[in-house]
Length: 410
Image 1 (cartoon, rainbow, N blue to C red):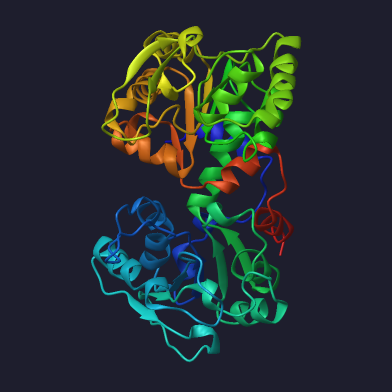
Image 2: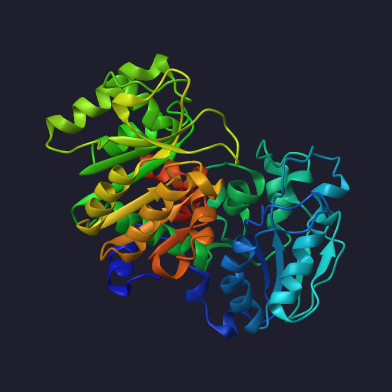
């Protein structure tokens, strides 16, 4: 859900053509190539276990379809070897899922690069896993030009891959007759810009995960922007070490203690804060049936594993979230997959849902937590992206976005 006034303000800094600005007459009969992000989780039998990303991309597909366009959609799925797709890499399950959502057949087109397939007006086809094409990841210019020749309008609706310069995400946009952003891409950028560049204060960020090293740059970037930086998981343990607190045998990165201390000092120097837990849930082993024990930080034993934040800490952070103006959430604060260790993440999730703040959440584990606690309709914007979400927050240039901006006037 986006506030229209905020979205219009945000888009001012993001000038590019958008699919939704085309009329039905402009799209009718046109070959519309949509790069989506259908990298969905599957079980061992190949069944899709979460179709969130497919449902998120439906708006763009339906818009082009209803206009009578010849719609081609492709995506990556997993990490196939180029030129050697295996059965487990196929988008066949995605085609079936998309067909169910659209209420009409969706053909899967293998070996589509040679263009020897026909799409009728009002038809949608799935072009087999684009990562199987030789030259996709290296952004081969010949492959990109070949893809561009297959369409009249190229639509990038895969914000989750916007940080990668690949043939189907960046290269093709240089050579297509028209290159534009799909509704999901435009909405993601508007929401992120609203959450950061146009943020209502106080701005609170929740960044959690197993390692500081994987999110160090985002933590450093946010330390210059946010009023409260809430850390969780293994990241919080490293920050606790930086404060001299005992963490037992919990996951942490002792070699990054100085970096954590520097971030704390930077925040404090400008009157901001990194609120660390005063109590935690501990267990003697990492297992769903391990016994949870609530302890004050000072009482953590040498053989303890910290698996969640404690009751007092969760309540204190929930109060902080109630007074926030904007909340950016990336990562659960505990091992929420295990019921016994899910309390902290559950409290924070419901606090975000009930806060009057503008809230945006992103990342696979975060989306899983949102779905687990049933609060999806109470978050202002849920990003389907992971790496691109973080890189945008860091202020990095996303190549797939840059090329759309370059093509805005063409």
